[in-house]
Image 1 (tube, rainbow, N blue to C red):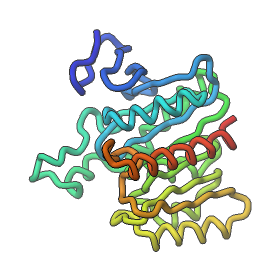
Image 2: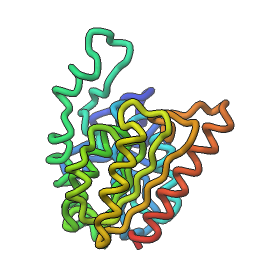
Image 3: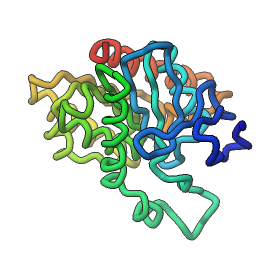
Length: 242
């Protein structure tokens, strides 16, 4: 049975997605969009922003990563309840009470274990906005992931960065109210003080928070910047998830 619109059906357990070339199945107890390179034993967990795992451009990015040779998993950490800007009486600060990043971190652990059981030799993780905080927590241990990438992070603290133990790339926006340029620079300085942890920090000029998965298709500059960030992310994984 195919999905209808942007809603995912409950049965059967594996569904072909209406957005993207992959399918939806349960992994580690969560519904996930899966886009996989044939016979890959290298996995990437792609963690969404607050708009959830069904976002078309997020799934398009998952497909791009899969084409590069990875088994890509995009979990539904919000259990079918991503933030909806049209619900005016439920702003982010209220929505986040039910969808904390600490909960996301606990829910991603069974997914990591499931990927290992599937025979994945190495696992990378990339987080957009909300998802970057979950990646920051995963990056505290090489037992979870072997490399991480932030795309326009949110909720990440300096203490999170101090605890990072795996190679980390941070791709930030020049115009970002969630993680301002000054904070990204602090992250960069902390990482530079940790020579045992390789890092790559880059600021994209002229773009704003969310640009890598919420760019305007008619804006050539935005599309180019998003693609550049995607290529930087892939280069990082090709360096460490191989």
